[in-house]
Length: 150
Picture: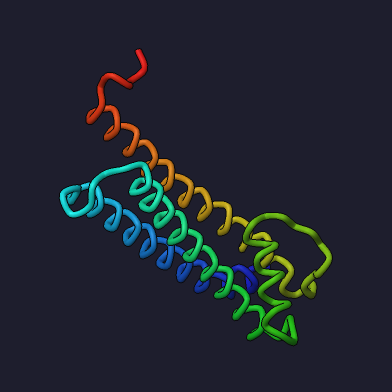
């Protein structure tokens, strides 16, 4: 049991670092968008583009984390091909838990470790996207106080 946790720990640390990089990039890009409204007029479509960029960056970060776990599964000899390892990783990371592909008893505990990693990282991604939406609502209200709810 301890062997599986210690084996997964470096990938877990890598995932935290990847998430931090993608959160930072998303928030920096979004802050740049908000701070430079003169370059492009602020319209509904500019909001849609900004939020879409944040969402896509966060999804890309999560996908790269799934890919990192899949590489670990291949290195451990759990799967013969990358596509199966990636599928299993995505099922674990997203906490779906289909159970159609099961790892060997020796490394089976890596599944819940990856699931814990995934649910935490999806939570962080959701928080970043929610923060961007709330910021856009505040910006809209400040720009157009007539449309603000009572």
